Amino acid sequence: MFRRGVSVARRVVASRLRGTHVWIQPQPLYTQWIKPRSAIRLTEPARRYTTHSSLYLRTHTDIPPQLSTMDAPYPVPGSDGFVTLSFYSFFSLQSIQTTRSHLQAQWEALGIVGRVYVSNEGINAQLSVPFAKIIDLREWLEHSTVFRGRISRFNWALEHSQAFKALHVRVRPLVAAGVEVGLDVLANEPEYVEPKDWGKELDTPDALVLDMRNTYEYRVGRFDNAVCPDVDTFREELDQVRTMCSTRPRDAPILMYCTGGIRCSVAGAVLRGDGLTNVKTLRGGVIAYGQHVRKTQETQESRFRGKNFTFDKRRGEVVTSEILAKCDQCGSECDTFVNCAHTSCNLLFIQCPGCAEKHKKTCGRELCVERAQLSHEERVKQKLPPQWSHRERVRPELVFRDGVAHNPLDN
Image 1 (cartoon, rainbow, N blue to C red):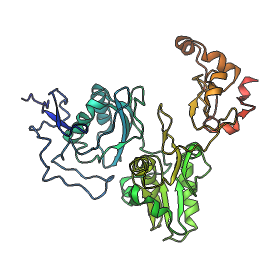
Image 2: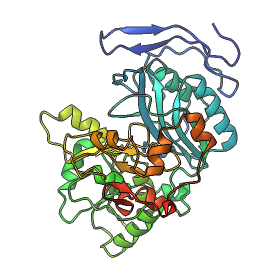
Image 3: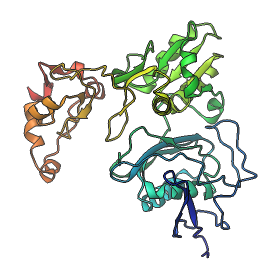
Image 4: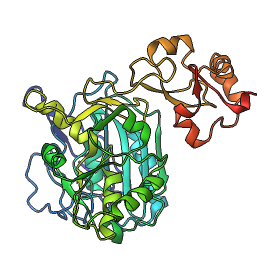
């Protein structure tokens, strides 16, 4: 049954459709980096699986849980057979470059694509996974001597497809906070509120509700009465939030939310370190809240309105049907973010179908319309330097006039 360093244990997936078990044939998954283990019957209960009480500050464990049910219920994959998910975990991670190399090679071999950051403080991952490889990914994590017992239930997306072109694993801070955020800081965790209880928290008198996302994310979807600092990076936002909260009583209620939770875990820990004692955050972020809304939409009204922006090819997931924004070119109701088809421009803006057809999926600049018609090979040969500063690229209101983006470089 086994070769050294290679697990060929049969895996079982609980079938959502028939209530039976689907047996997946054995196949090699692991290299020498994964500690060889005995065969595991995934239907047997894990009697000795224990973790730290936090879902994000994780301790090491030896016995994996029931792998076939740990992430259930499983979502319906997109038409391309992929599901999209995210997770993060804070723990002391050593040998970062080695870890990066193994993740890149072994997850790529499973057909996984996405964006992964690793650092001394842990991992932050957004992935699209072939549906047939979901259990393989969980089994890989739970057999790994590095990640076993440290990755909680996957945070399933609201809409599924191959949201990334390739897999990129990078060594970099999990969140660009602009301040040193080590495990000692992250130990000051905020209180995590389950999505089902978030509405009650929003009704707390005198609560300051903070949207810890970017202004363009806030533009297409948000909780009512939330405050989103008018800045362009998380680093600037954290600075401004700390200033805002410094004038409030230490026990005044502060509620925070973001896309998937990690920015609030970091920001909440920083605020707790500043001495604030009543800091709460939405567990799993807007993604998890959106899942809750879909399960309870017949009995409970969503407190989030609009779309949840995503940093991948989808550019957003619908939480409610309300459209809160307008096309940056014609002003009609629209909440579809696009990037200018001229890749050297890459301006991020909202564009309706009519303007997409009129301007050839570009920002309307003559240069962009012309170059967007070139073949990929021609565009690569004639690649131009970046056309905008970061602030301009994410602030279409600064550059659009009369439905067309204006750049001083054109003069």
